[in-house]
Length: 79
Image 1: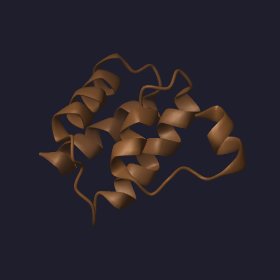
Image 2: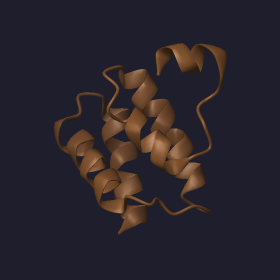
Image 3: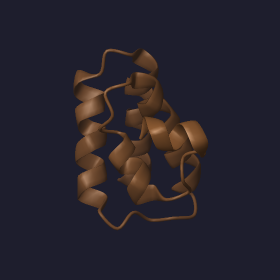
Image 4: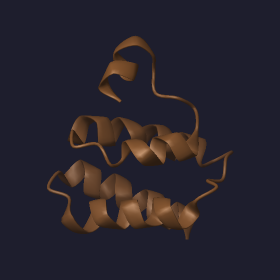
């Protein structure tokens, strides 16, 4: 992910961004969630359960308050 993002912006693909949520860097996770927040207005993920699971994990064990709040908002949108 880091090598890709160094040369390109994060893609406009909900399912790819869901994979970025697995990244170890909270900054990358936040970038992906911010992009997801916008894209979910017009796109529906193919793997909704996987995205919900990833967001629940970030919400429940996240150490960064901003990430926890973003995850909570995204989960509300997907409900």
